[in-house]
Length: 460
Image 1 (tube, rainbow, N blue to C red):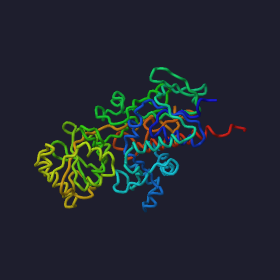
Image 2 (image 1 turned 135 degrees about the vertical axis):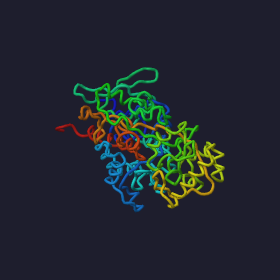
Image 3 (image 1 turned 180 degrees about the vertical axis):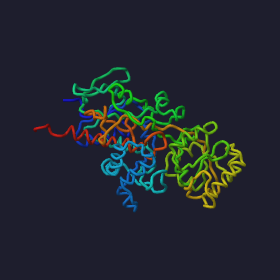
């Protein structure tokens, strides 16, 4: 008998989704997590907990017409047709089942976000927990794992090597403890949920040079373990230049300033007091845009209406709690509070307000404003950041890892360890792509592993 049926490397959203699904199927599951900081430092815990899905009961209840096919079309449009079609199709198809399962079987308190729509999504389809904080979502998944029979989480324990049998299928893995001791564990399946390589500057510079040198704001375990294993075993990789950036990481506090501010009508100016693009194209591609400005800094400008609209975001409340917003009664006061040139800022504010009122087209092409800024104004200093990478091991529709285009029996990858659905670079990223790739591929991996490992032997 093997030490476990399914061995999962990583206790973030991807690993927990795989582990919970496999355990529900009756598998004995062991999750090996390398870092004691995973409860706060996984990319799932650091996210805004947005899980996009088209065609859910929440949407039907709200009268929103959506479907996996429409979601697929949005991904294809945003990525310019460069997303992995197999992974994208699998993720948009599994998404409605995923959010329903999380809510009804795991007691994750999901709801549909209806107060604004993220760039690139043609329908309201992001599902989130009440405080829109990834750590709340992650905590709910961990609580479900604690309740699940046959599932054990081992911390700290790092998967360092995947062991294959003579036929090329999974036999188990090597696990290393902090004292350097190692142990070979046998398993029927291994799920690599070790995340990407955003915390490895050398790999970022090699594969995603556009964002090299940017502030990294992601899980400390994203060091490229899956790529190292891929090299050892000759596994296929794809889309390694893909990443999720973010154009509004508050400085010096290093707290995410939600892009909902932009979608409610806020805008960014650089240190000259001028806007430098259409902010609504997406927060991911705006990371490099902000970093290309003087000193790699910008100010996000908004008003009291937007401040109130962003209260549901725990991250925004943390930004406010840190004292990051500079408030003023008018543009001149805001210029004094931020050190921005008053004449340039006033010209920018007047042009933005005119465009928001529909009086004249925006010179930078922005169409979506919601409403012009009025009354008391606020500004937060931000920089562009790398949140996580979106390329990795090639997988099929079951999240099975490919080698020369053929699935390796018993080996799966999910989340940042696998190729996602964001195409190349930063511009293909849609809000929630990373979390859906984590939870969705984890769900698919756990489901397939459970089906294979629990089916009766041939001839029985």
